Length: 89
Image (tube, rainbow, N blue to C red; front, side):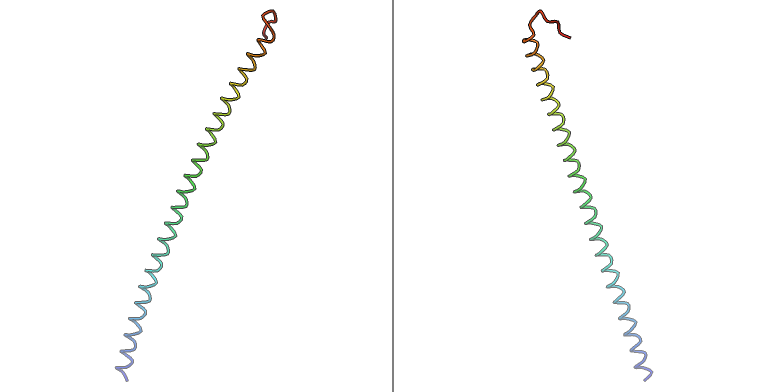
């Protein structure tokens, strides 16, 4: 009976060690996966934000250039309509 109790204790101890090893391995896999997903998502969001900012800056610069060109053209046309005798203010 003493041998049966000793063997049962050793099996229980080995089983607990295996469960602990599996638990630690699972924890490492899960934390590694979460870390990779968070890092990847952060990089994607940063890249999208940078692209949106670059696109917005391009549109603003282009629009400002177009508005300036139109203003110059309108100014030129109004100067022609006023003639030489009207002083420009």
